[in-house]
Image (tube, rainbow, N blue to C red; front, top):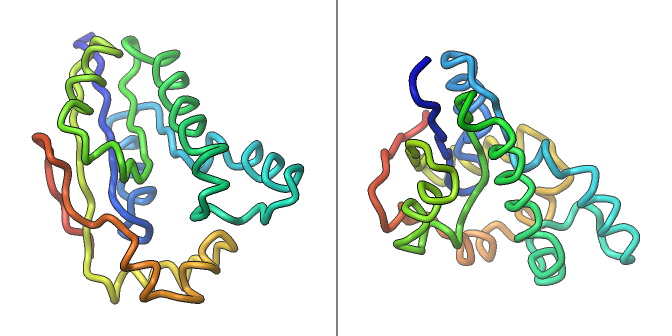
Length: 167
C-alpha cells in the first residue's frame, strides 16, 4: 500500500465542501471527516448548557469556546486514521488558510502527504445552496446576508493549494 495522504477541503459556507469531500472520499475509499459531523452534538450541547443558541456558529462566544476544539477533534480523528488510511477532511479553516505555515505544519504533524483544495463558487449560488439546505445554523447568515458576506473570508489560501470552482 502507498503512503497515506491527507486532503483538506476548505472554503466558505455553501460552496459545496461536504458534497465534494464526500464524493472524493468515496472515490479514494478514504476516511471522510466533516467538521460538522465530527463535533456537532457536543457543540450543540455545550452552547445550550452555556445558555446560548445551540445553532450559533458565528458569534465570539462560539469561536472562543469551540472553534479550536472543533478543529482539534478533526485533527485527532485524522491522526487515528493516518497513515494507514487516506483521510479527506472538510471544514472552513477560514483563519488557518491565512497562515503561510498551515500546510507545512500539517505535513509535520501527520507525517504524510497533504493536499489542500479550496472550493469556491459565486455568491448567488452560495446563498441559494445555504437557503436550500435549511440548516438552523444558517439562520443568522441569511437574516443579514450582506453583513455575513462582509465578515466572510473568500480569498484562497496563502500557501500552495488546488482551487476548485463548484457549480
